[in-house]
Amino acid sequence: MLNERVSAAKKIAADLHRAEDAIDEAMIRIAQLAATLPTARRETNMSAIVGQEAMAKVAHALAAAGEVRQLLTDAHLALTVTQKEVGLGTRMFGAGVKPAAAKLVDEGSNDMSVAALPLAQAS
Image 1 (cartoon, rainbow, N blue to C red):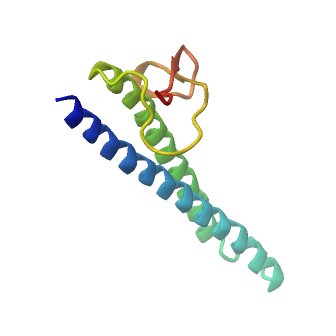
Image 2: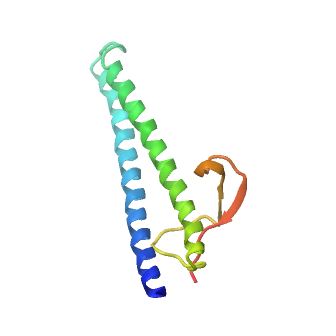
Image 3: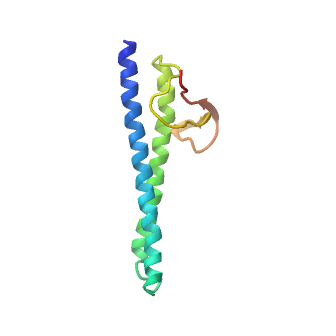
């Protein structure tokens, strides 16, 4: 039974890390586009009005991607709680540097500090 839980946790961790990497890549590309639009406008001597609606949409897309990233980090922190609930203790699944501690608050958001929760560490 432990082997099945460890196997499932490894798959979840791998998929979570791929999702986190994907949203980071999307944010990078959107931010690059957000920089290119006004640069192109200025280089072509166009009025600030030209392309404003598109620029606003790109800025909104970047903000939305930031919200998605927040939800993924909230899910990541929630999964550290689940990890302990299913008896996997302090194991590390996947690569990457983890902060020493993170915060969880009510309603699944980690944007305000209420209680410190240690993240999974290598066993």
